[in-house]
Image (cartoon, rainbow, N blue to C red; front, side, top):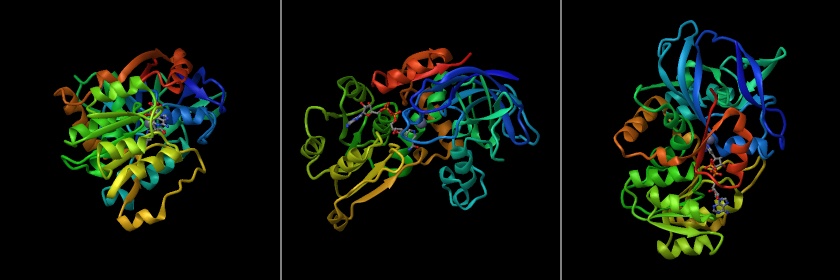
Length: 366
Ligand code: CND
Ligand code: ZN
């Protein structure tokens, strides 16, 4: 079928909104009509040339929609079902899936980084040439085909535009707190970078019952939003040294520090904010080839640093939980959606993200 999609060709160029050919779902795959797709900074990293991606690619990895058709053997969803899409479809059989770390799935991560289905090929094409799918999704399109393992069915009264945010920003942010760090009630948390993902780290910390939640950003309006999402303290890093400020608010440093920007210098700041024995969690995606330097002496204080991929997502468990939290009024999603763009407005949406104007924008392709 013919679909409309936003295609990345090369860095520093606007995405091209074009008609593409979409092949129907093969065995184990699902055709989805995209209701909404969030605009995440990970997509912007490709456009800004900081992280490489297969070209051409349909970007967009934070999407929800409605199942239109299923390929042979698909059992977990059927036409009409509402689904949130996962950018790491997990196979359920590799060593990572078996030990309960499906976000590290060997096959899913390979498909994600290639921008293909599990068989190594994408379903979009233009003039007979393959067009890849960011995160095995390619959500900036009117329709897409995804692996069955990349679909999580949700209840139908959950608004699909809100549900889209669960596909990356919310899962990544809340998951980094609950799955990766396992933040304990009453403990102190610092969050460096309060954009679409960082605000969800803040609200994850609030959900976990953290004590002090210190939000750090360089934009005053992000800090105001962070308060709405549960921050108890804010630090404007454009006005004062954020490490000193955090150590003043939480003497000795915080129990958990999260970096949610993707820069070596802010990773270092987060590490320096953590107390003796504290945990630093890097959520931000750094530029390809970047390195971080840490004070080696700090290891004697048993400080730990780890990454968090997709918030340690176990999508079939975590997505329905997040849906219930939203439906019962305990997870903020409405407040995250700053703007809604048509597919034709996609480059404006990325410009707004680059300028720091939005918490999250969503694109509604149809
Ligand atoms: P977004 O651009 O919305 O937020 C970044 C925030 O950082 C903005 O509010 C900025 O003002 C703020 N900021 C910039 N520089 C500084 C600074 N020096 N000190 C303090 N604050 C600063 O981006 P996003 O929230 O969509 O994404 C954040 C990162 O998370 C980005 O690197 C993205 O690629 C990454 C990410 C990771 C994962 C994962 O699985 N680990 C999934 N999705 C996105
Ligand atoms: Zn993302």
